[in-house]
Image (cartoon, rainbow, N blue to C red; front, side, top):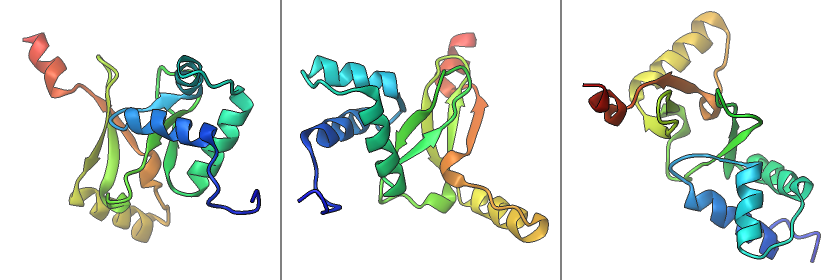
Length: 139
């Protein structure tokens, strides 16, 4: 059964539960490790990385480098979302990461690809600024 690509272990399911629980943000390997410990799974970080690599290959998660966060962050990729229109925004004050969709960004990606011969990876595009909630608290 180990040759079956669709074979799921309890560990994989638990990792996916953690990622989906945090679908509006991102998780680190340490976050997943703590989640698994809290749910009585004994899993090493190497195993978590291995599962995350497979999930990234399958297009289930994307790996992001988020400023101010040590190590990689992982974000769930909803299969219904159109990747070409997507990007992420991170509030520099509260740290919340949100997936945004905007058809104008697809135009920019296409322009940069066609005119500048550079392909942007929309799964890893992060813009930094201040969210609406934090802007209101400044006033």
